Image (cartoon, rainbow, N blue to C red):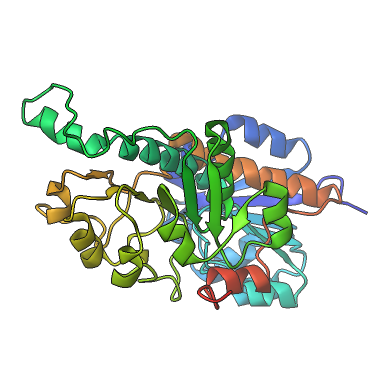
Length: 356
């Protein structure tokens, strides 16, 4: 029987409380739980005197709570904490636990404690920015921007993308189709594009439901008008797109990366772009941030943004919105959506990503 008023703690950086915890979501949580905020700073619980406390105080503060959700600034949820707080039923990370670095998930699973992660709250703006970079890259906006900055504000047919500037009806290839990829698919539908996906972790059942064509990395690179990298950075995906893969991209293609820079070999990418026959829209690059004066910033067929795809005020609050959704589902007897499980953790750590 679900607890009618479970005790829930939300812990995180005290200075970021308003950034993460929207008043309406606090009220929603209060409608079904006895919840309280635990002020923290720089990974430590703050005492009543405002001073940082040790882990023992953190463990004791959990008390008889049935749920705890953390965001940056809070201490980790260690094996000892989970072991010594037997009333815990569910723990979660709002933002930043892509690889279960702040929750000892193995201990949680051993004790029957459910683990959830709502980091995917930032996937919404990432998908929007991916769409934006596709559109501006198809028009080679970087070329026009540089001309404007140089004082030439005239339109020109010299732009390499002059005849290829529309998205409607194009072939779009996705490398990775997690939360951001699936959101991007929704945003692309009105453009009547043909979508192909390389993602060994995407189930065929889900691909069928979304009407996606699963294929190889080589086909995505060689047979798309726009290629979008949305894969997570793992030991398997680092350097996944190197010189040989970049050679597969035909002239006239747009390459967008809103994931992580090291997935694409930075030096090889610069050399490919120097030919001037493809256009890139990059929110990330390797190295990241891009050093001042790096040659990538001078290329006319590149549009750059400084790793801002997932950074919006709405996304920070969405992390907590999704966590409240999860807690509401859990304490009302429904399945949670965003679970950390042995399978999801293996996926996130990149086990066999490169193999079908």
